[in-house]
Image (cartoon, rainbow, N blue to C red; front, side):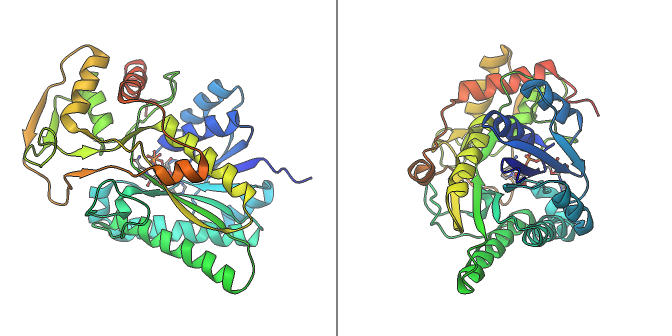
Length: 347
Ligand SMILES: NC(=O)c1ccc[n+]([C@@H]2O[C@H](COP(=O)([O-])OP(=O)(O)OC[C@H]3O[C@@H](n4cnc5c(N)ncnc54)[C@H](O)[C@@H]3O)[C@@H](O)[C@H]2O)c1
């Protein structure tokens, strides 16, 4: 019997993936997680089980391992794949370029080959606003020119191009097999409101929100604010922060859309359409946790852009999806997770 509601979530033990498992299950899908656990902890999957009442199946292995993928696709019949597995640290990617291309680009290709071999054509790919490079106009729409300033961003851009070409090749040959969405995430923050799952960086956090949360909980001394002379509201960098629950809701909207469409390629921005500065983020966290967050202004970092926020109107018109949670809710949920789990899932 075709188990039409099973969804494979690669990278599903990670920050965004664990939240995606929750909303997928709540929307009536059965999430199956494939993860190498290179940047995650299997306890996250247990906690997902606590939230949804049933622990998702976890297939531990590498998305680059084609023989392993074949076994997984033989064991389960998937209606669609959400491909989140990947390495994501921009700084690290500049020092380990080959590893990033091999993991992120090689992984996507191995996955697509396995999908084709097993007759699964519906794919959602975790892309990023980083594919817009240093965008000239704000808000940035899906039609903006794409470029990359580091190997991580380039790996996302390369996968987008590969997937686009795959769909074009399909159309040339009248196959109508591939049905693909690239979701360009802005800056996911926050956690599930239960406080049971959240972002659990292994080393020094690369992103602002978990860094602030770790300072708030006393694990780190102070937040470094890189630059206060940008032409923004207060001189510090402005980004479009989106609650991780809104972000994963966007995946369900995209999934529902794909399952009604035969084939094609689409890209959607998942952002709120509103930007906040670093100092505004710090102030919001201070309000949530009721204590001051020590921070220090440092020099600008090379490669950082002044501001970036999404034109999120395409996702609203095509998918009927929009972010609904505000900054207060993002930081309250991030803080609840951090306060309840000062050591994350415990390494
Ligand atoms: N968090 C962000 O700010 C952000 C922004 C834009 C895009 N993204 C993308 O979203 C996806 C999920 O990000 P996240 O923040 O949840 O990161 P994460 O590191 O928490 O999750 C990624 C998961 O993928 C797994 N993984 C990595 N390489 C793998 C491989 N070769 N085989 C199997 N599993 C592998 C890791 O163990 C981890 O569980 C990534 O592709 C990331 O690039 C994240």
